[in-house]
Image 1: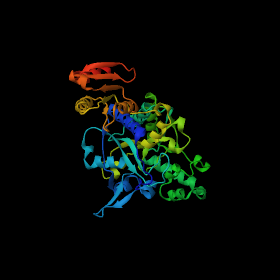
Image 2: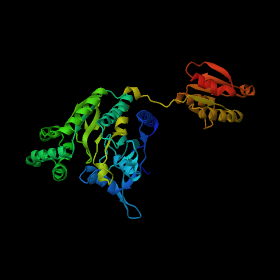
Image 3: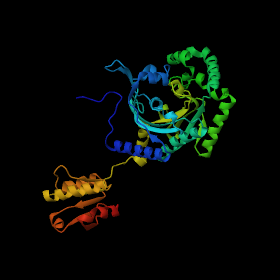
Image 4: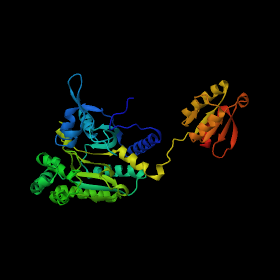
Length: 420
């Protein structure tokens, strides 16, 4: 028997209904905030991710799915969403338009890593990118949007962990201080961190192995090495978050795992479920150098991503969602071939008027159809029989109260809409 590849999963049954629900909440909130949906390819030129995510990042060094196509082109399965959106922004010259571009995406990503809860090789992320604006109000808006989406999903006790890396001058100052501090302690760090020390020391702060070591706990803080301009910018972002009543905590350990971030970086957790790193529901930051590094103009960007798998796993633990079911609004019942023809027309009319409708397609008798309607949690039953049909009538029954009404077949759609 052929089985699914390691690190992938099938989404079926009640879990698929929960996925649909989350997707609908995300789409509604994105629309309210006036973000435009964007879809980029699942694979791109490998160079895009090597240049944007960074050669020194774990994603590029260890986790990307790289391959050559029949034309010997180097391609990579999408490991994250930002690079593809920025590539599209540049390729289609959208930077020439007068307004900042506000995008959201929702799609699968691929990273070759050890599968575990909330961390699969094929996973889904939804996220946003705002390109062309450097205003701190945008930082506050995107953080607020992520926070409010999670809040709309009834995830409680949310907190934004926020930090700033500052501008290039501030980042360089901090890098020098961090190198000076870490150098005497290299033998006490993991092998990956010793390698990161040579290539990108800031990545050491994001290490999962040494996260709880006293060495990293006592490391210099980025916020202490900000120049005045970067400090003022960060204070403005926090002021806007206060105004929007977003619960946050300044956390100097937040640096994020990708090389392109500068200034604001953040993660969102639920304090009710924050025992492990997997409790991070989403995060992101500003990347004001990335567009230029990908051969575009000197412009600005900020974005974030949420892991759908982690959110779904958390929602399944919340009692509110434990009995989630897809409810059929109408179940149309018939026995004879004549009744079946009328049922087919009624089902079509109900569905085209936005009513979730089902009928038997396995040749069940009435008893079997009643059982199926109960399994589908049908609100209304439309029961057809030859005698009623000869008078142009159908029987509509409330499946909860058991009340019944004879309705003219030409008026059944309006009648059902009225009940629902």
